[in-house]
Image (cartoon, rainbow, N blue to C red):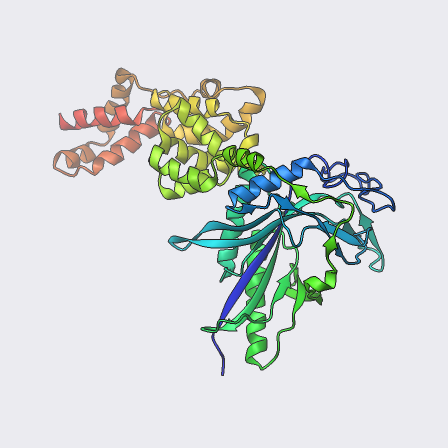
Length: 482
């Protein structure tokens, strides 16, 4: 007999901080450089070296903690987490254990038609390990790139408050947006700047005690997180319904096969033999400094989204899309400052602009179309120089033309797309169309007003799409009524 189970999920998210140097040394943190070119005796774990705490990393951790509604520990310290792995040359990782820099926070995430609070247990500073590079031609060989070793991370750990893969994705997107708004993490999951480790267990519906926990290791996309969790729920349900036992272990997500696979048995805290790092003195943060950091926080996504609805009259959907990225929200507001029609701007930014940016793999921050250039195109429509249809058709060229400095006005002129609004010219076209379609004119005069659309289409066709639709409608009604 099958049993109905509830999934219980907690998350560990590793966010790489946007510092120029590593957590405990002056080596750079740039991504993609040749292997082992950003290393020194400190991050290589050479005997006799001494780490020095990166102040910028501490500041970023505090800003993130405040934005996540955490309590900031004024006195916190680093510990050694002992384990052996080829990409960890010291044989231990410098992390925080008993006294993390941030704890007891909460984040509100969209779930269904409402919002759900997700509690943050802790957010602590640590250094990253290196990277194993497996030789595809010789599977027995693996190489180690230590460029990433020592890179500052903020590990953000939730309570077990999540109950579905969709809730996990909603939380991750919310968290990513917050960290990117703060400029403390670039959120690039593909490059590993943001990595997620769900801890998942099942329990019979109504039971309070947790089931046996399984950790899914280092997943770096929203889709993979969702797929891995949903697979693991099905796997564990099958094991339990067949009378089996779930083992506490760490599993990897195999993207190609669409399954999780055992990596190792899950360690407990005592397995790591944590103890205070003797080379690093405890951190003592000034309360006034922490408060100054709180006051300097930028407007965060959820607050900005609400403001876009109240100040600009945007639908919730539009406000949600526009505030997912600080750069996109800034772009929208720059446009509205020049062209006070928020909904029109929203439609163009979410439609034409985002389509071109997504096709090019660019963010709003790198948009070749400046707010001034987009607004100048919209003003051409308002002035009757071109129709809305033409504006949309030429936007890809406006986007491409930004690179060589061509303005929307120049593009319109070069392509001969200026809209015909001269009444005499339009009346001549209308007279010719009506002369060819007298039966339809008689139908309109007999009360079949839907025929007007037919005439508008014919006039637009005869003018090569250049006729001003508003003027055409106005003149047609006069002519047909006569």
